[in-house]
Image (cartoon, rainbow over all chains, first blue to last red):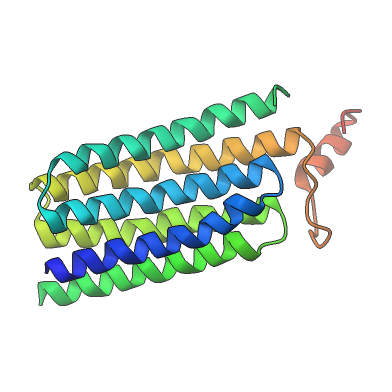
Length: 86
Length: 116
């Protein structure tokens, strides 16, 4: 089963690489926030599967906090934009 | 048998993740990209997380954390997408030229507001 885990982790990283293109091109900051949010989700999944593959439970908490702060960041950024502070 | 279920779920999830990522790359404006981003997160991430729960069991550290991440995605992702789209609209980011309607503007025109 561990073969499946590492394969999924690598596939998620490749998909994240696709999103880096949008992160680089933008053109607006909003587009970059969308790409970054999606990229963080892929990174979270990759980290979860890698931790299952390597049997390292410490990475689990890193994955959870990565997901949580990614969404918090998106919400806060949206608030700033709405009030014209960016 | 359980391994086959896990592999099938992972393939479904990765397919949706990939198509969502391609959508974020190719869609013409911000609002359509937000829609693709949401699809990547829900239909892409959830099957993969369910696969991990199936593989490890819901009470194991890995399955439990996967469930927690799944709940987090389900609850927060709609809020984040909505907040971002609303903020972008208020900031005046234009819709794609091919967009067929703008219901917020229609509603405001009906109410007689001068704003935008």
